[in-house]
Length: 357
Ligand code: PHE
Image 1 (spheres, rainbow, N blue to C red):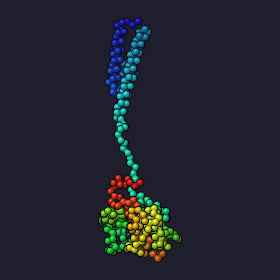
Image 2 (image 1 turned 135 degrees about the horizontal axis):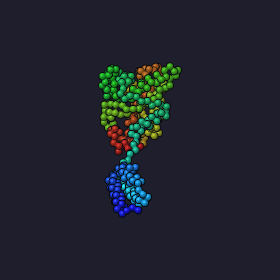
Image 3 (image 1 turned 60 degrees about the vertical axis):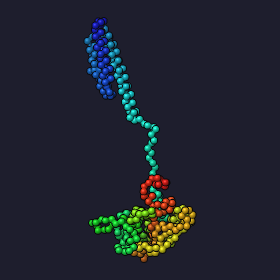
Image 4 (image 1 turned 90 degrees about the vertical axis):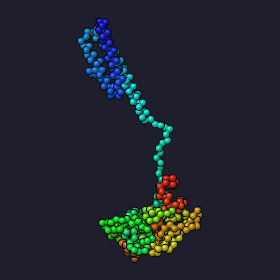
């Protein structure tokens, strides 16, 4: 049997180990620190483990008594460990909940659904209608050469007709010696597209007709309620061996009536002048109903492609002829939606733009 003093010392020693374990656990502020503290007591060479090893030398009875006491101490330490683990985990969760707290009373940040710009809607509509009539849709540069913008269109340097368009000249002291401008109309696309087309079918027995529209941005030195320095045009060109002014009338009338969904829309081809067409005509439309009824409204310039332009396309003007037109999608958009000031299209006010869907 163990003696009284021995037991007393033993118990005291164990109690103090348990106390210091509780202290060490309480000081641990993070799970990793806690596991380190655990090792000091319950690890391979921890204090409790060392006590167990020390029992080897004891007699059977002492082993029983001391073993039971050490086990109690070990259980107390393990209980303290589990408790501290839970406390640390709870605290971590609390912090996380606070950090990730969601104030459900805050209004959400919505991602607004955008909408197409009204002029883009018009462009798409124009493309669809002409595509249904077999027209290709072509795209070209906004910074254009002087030759494409004017000269190729039978508008040579110093010709008075050039002053019809207040062009932005791009001052490039080009190595290439070519004068550039911001294209004042989409008409340069007539010659550009024709060149591509002629090249594509070179050497083939039959060249298909040229039937194309070229929508895009155009520029002029002009700014008021109905003019913007940047605006849009859509060129049209139909060239073949047997294309006449009558076809222009049919195609454009069909287009306008479809575009405005108005079967009784009237059209007027008013004689005019462009260097690149002969004869030339302004195209006016007239609604029979609605707020604009009865007024003639100009929507396009047009005419039979001038023989000089046909030559510049690389085609024989004795063989190929046809018509071209240039219309203003901005104007068409204003008429379709009843917008009175062109500048609204380019101010970027979403209260205005959001109305077109
Ligand atoms: N390019 C002309 C303009 O901007 C319009 C036009 C195009 C006229 C094609 C005739 C033929 O006013």
